[in-house]
Amino acid sequence: MVKNKEKTGKRAASAASKTLKSPKASKTAKTAAGSALAQSKTKKETGKKAASAASKTLRSKTTSKAAKTAAGSTLTQRRNKSKR
Image (cartoon, rainbow, N blue to C red; front, side, top):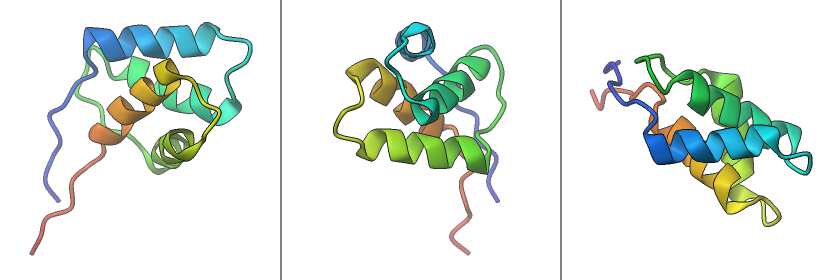
């Protein structure tokens, strides 16, 4: 597997913070946002649970734009599988 070197940017971190503060955000959206925020200053990678939550958040029709931004950042930071 190839190690991922991505970090959450300022815009995505801000979106993640908004999502975590929102009383209307779903549990899955908050899980994805928490993962994105935790990775803003480190090179940690997204785990399976957070990746699954991010995927569900992106597919949801009722999720806010901020939550989807955070979820996208979370998925970007998954470990890449090598193509061998």
